[in-house]
Length: 114
Image 1 (tube, helix red, strand yellow):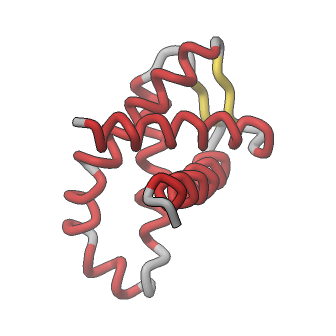
Image 2: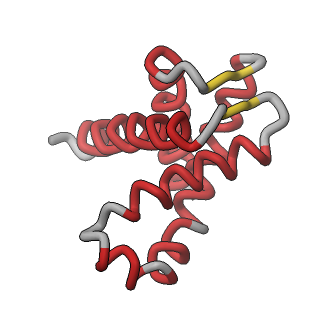
Image 3: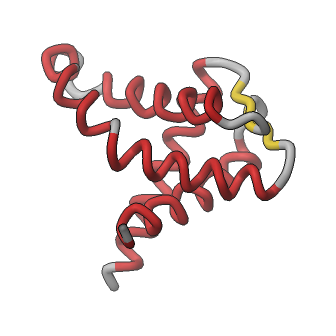
């Protein structure tokens, strides 16, 4: 449970950072951003591994690049679930997913003390 909350916190920070760099990412309120981060962390912890396994052949065929599409789909799913969050298209979702992934990777490395 702590791991999902930690992922959610890093996802919320990543979404916040992405709002500065991605023009197609919009939040109505700061509370929506925090809740979207928690939902994104839960979706990435629970649903993403299943999608990675199910799409393994196309991921291998594209040398792993399809994982970016899966990450963008997770951001789009959260935007669809959250009433106060809007992503304006695939490229905005992809850029947001890349930024959230980088921030999550950096946050996890810092949390481990590296």
